[in-house]
Image (tube, rainbow, N blue to C red; front, side, top):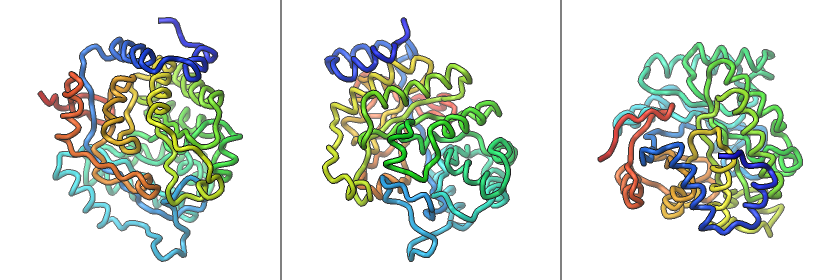
Length: 349
């Protein structure tokens, strides 16, 4: 299949018939995943702290250090969450916090080592690029050293959080204190060099143009050409409730389901080198999450035993394992539970 150019991708976003886009994306999905299996993972988001100095305008989760409801979880609280996850057959924790202004590399090393030693069967998929960047700054060491030291203690994989739109004009409006697009890309590049795989994400629906969405996808595709380190691509729409950005830009249109499916299909066609595309049912709801499987997605993400960040901004969908399996079967595909590396652990016949 000929690689999609930026101009072709832009044309598809702006002009393509939605049903035709779905057909093309499904065809591409079947080329990559001919077995008809749709996967998901049983995991838990653990936000080890909500203290953050970055103050992203699209985020409703963060608190400042002196706020009454600011917290840093104790080992006992984290262990209890992992014990609950193990009880339902979970295999991964998505481990992220706010960008805490005072926690240094030794604190993170001790925490990762504690979890990895006590729960070796749990994969730690943790720490976004901005967390890693700030750990390096506050500890006065390089990003490479942060990654290498955390890997040595048991960090297996890093999430794509903090990408938003990889364009500095957009980032300067919605999160002016956040790392630049090039820094996000370079941190994932350094992780890939060390053998730490990651995911790529995109949050759309704020101030970005279609051209800037293509720029974002191009950055992901270019790095994947270079390193092959991205396991999956996940995108979702901006969730506005309780956010500063909604107050500053009250006339932002609410992203439609049509827009989500359109962008998802174009991502599947454009990101020809990224093996997995995840459906964001957490923000879109189960029905559109299911529809995404007809627009290029081959993975339903996580059962989301716990999710705090987008819930703070108004997204409150939940799904159990059986419901996820039913949604997959209803489309004529075979549900399967996977691990962090997208290995199938159990086919749910």
